[in-house]
Image (cartoon, rainbow over all chains, first blue to last red):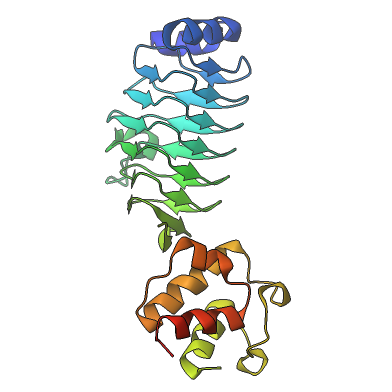
Length: 174
Length: 76
């Protein structure tokens, strides 16, 4: 059991809210569950809404300034860096997963084979629609828009509007 | 309506070619929502090799306006 896991369970959420406000000047809802670890860095005025769960026990998670993370989002940072830029709009129930389980062996349960992580990079001013999933190794360029319920698994160029599973560019903003 | 334009609209919006006429508007096509609008524009741009501005894209309220824009860009 790691210190981060103990803190996640027993540190009162109001103290987490206060801690993040004093440390970064950001607002973490007392109804959110955000790991309080030095791995997490959040920019000023960024808001993390109720019922979000943000896990960053094993790797760095950087969230920029003036970003808004909607209710019910899940962000699981892996070993590699996960970054979210400034001015991003992350809609409710978006899932960002920065790790994958290994599954090379058939004789060992998947959960015992360890994990891989390439990290997730989300640039500035990105709008991710409700319910979208951003998988490990994804890179979303500046000004891109992800349509609700899409699944991003690779690279989305800057200013693109991407939709589907896997998300494909349907339009480029101009 | 130009055959290529009809084909593009039918492909993107899943329309019957018989209903595609110069008077068809966005409001009359249920599936012509904001997202499909962007898909229509991208498909038209690819088919006719042109690039519209954001104002032009927003001004498209039906097929008549699309034809106007294509004519204005010498693509019809």
